[in-house]
Amino acid sequence: MVIGLLAVFINRCKTGKGLGARVIQLLAVIFVIPAILILALEKFLTAETVATLFGTLIGYLLSGISKFKPSQASKPTAGDKPKV
Image 1 (spheres, rainbow, N blue to C red):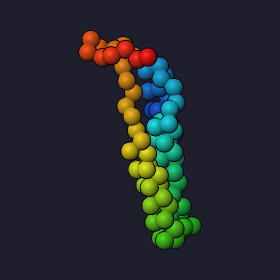
Image 2 (tube, rainbow, N blue to C red):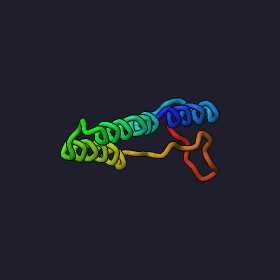
Image 3 (cartoon, helix red, strand yellow):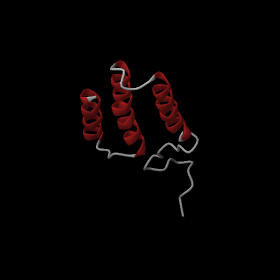
């Protein structure tokens, strides 16, 4: 979990980008999946609860795919129309 967090922040610092919605989703996955697995292996969560949590997590992650719009280049190319 710590390695994933450090990797994300190092990447964001090197590229000069901020924390967007996709990065926050990635960080949620980096923290939630290991936490669920640890609690399941320690028999703190039942199998039904683990399945419900993973189903909810997958539904949350896949629900935003249809709304995703890739970022556009800051400089327009020769064939692009200027934005008004």
